[in-house]
Image (cartoon, rainbow, N blue to C red; front, side):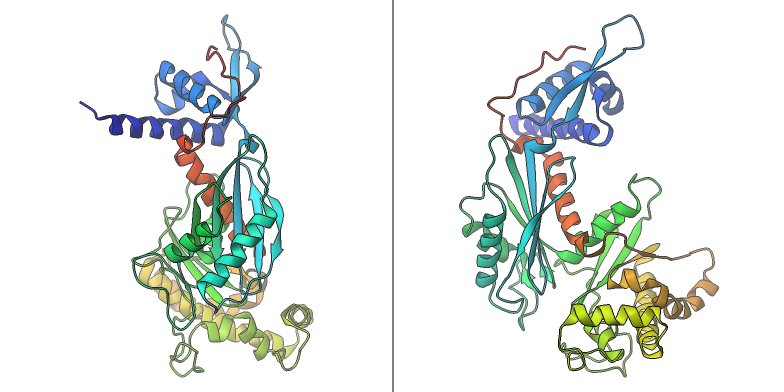
Length: 412
């Protein structure tokens, strides 16, 4: 005999099954849901009534039944019933975005923070204040989740926060932000920004989730270098949340000394600051800031200036060495380049190809696709919104009943 807990778990799973089908295929009728999910029609009717009571589903008209019966009533998700909040904490500041279950995301502003190397309490204060400023309660809207994308390593286990002022301990930062946000009635989740960007870029490149690569590596470069590993479309975090962290993968034992203590780390060649310095556009040369230097670097690339091209040739060889190691270890089918690497792909490709050509010669039937990501600097925010949305679709029962939403009759 099933326990009440088992029955509740089965019902939650079935609610998710129905809601996910509507998210992917709506508007559609109850009979369509029953056919696609394998649930009996009576169960679908009861589950739709539950989702309607929570304000997650609504009827939007009817379609011909194809026979002599009455027209079928069509169902769809209610976009604005649930709102997801995403915060991307970069080295420079905090950017926010919100979205419903099916609609387009909306920019929610930006804010400053005390710096990425300070105590977690100060960062939590800044995040909580930025979210409170950007998000105001709306009648009938359930705030589903706050997902925070953090630049830098993010650990997830019981280990203490990373030392030397680099990185974040997700449980600690989650608790601190929650404590400082008493008016935020939703769960808080902290994830590495490269993991979330990889998830978003992967789904942007493979939107239909059919014939997608089994194993995908992601590498990005902006103020620093980050990476992620996706297996079957899901983030693989490893034992401590650090799988895919590529910044300090050694690519040249005789390379420059890195702040981590090693020599020739990938970040010393492909980070934004490293590339700009190699092109003669470092902080001393362009004191106006990184954005000005990047604009000038782009101009020089398109003008085919020798030093700019050499900077990316060197970066391409370093990146190729890192990709060679990643592919050898993970057997990845696709490597997605994000951040500035996506924009620089045409100039990085010769160096990458030079490093990968020996492998391709030995394993000609095991190609590795190098693909620039299409989402640009907003990739992590899109990934955070997708993660929050997936949490609701996985467990619609966390959304309370909508006090003013009518319940449909459930007939076709």
